[in-house]
Image 1: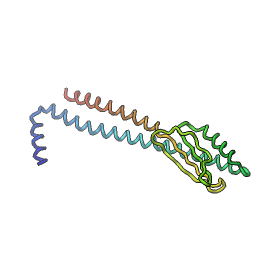
Image 2: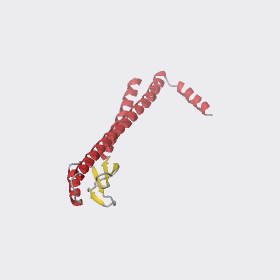
Image 3: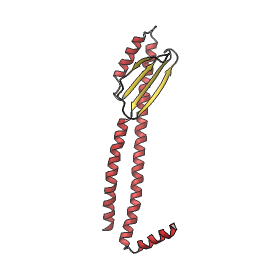
Image 4: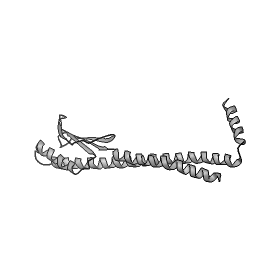
Length: 173
C-alpha cells in the first residue's frame, strides 16, 4: 500500500512544471545537507568545548594535588594550616570551580562556596601516601559551554531556514 501511495504522489508530482519539481527536489536535498551540516557543527563544538573543560579541570586538580603534597612535606602540619593553604589556592580559581577536601575520616577539611547551577563536570582523587588520606573533589560548571551551544543553536535555527528559502526561491527563478 505504501508504494501505491508513493506512486500516486509521484504521479501528482508529474503534473507540476519541471521548474517546480526541480526546485522542490533541490530544496529537499539542500534541507538534508544543511541539517546534517548544522548537526555536525553543533556536535563537534560540543565535544571540543567539553574536552577543553575536562582538561582545565584536570590541570587545576593536578595543581591542587601538587600544593597539598608540598604542604604535606612540612613537618607535622596542622589541620588549620591545611585549610588556609587550600583557601589560598581556591582564591586563584575562576568562580565556576568548586572544591571540597575531605580528611581521612571523611570529615570536611575545606569546602568552597558553590555557585553551581546546572550541569557540572566533576573529578575526584584520593591522596594516600604522605597526605594522610586526603580526598579531593573538584567540579567545574558547564554553564559557559551550554551558553555557547545555546547561541549556536539559535544561529543555526535562524540562518538555515533563511538560507533554504533564499536558495529555493533563487532556484525557482
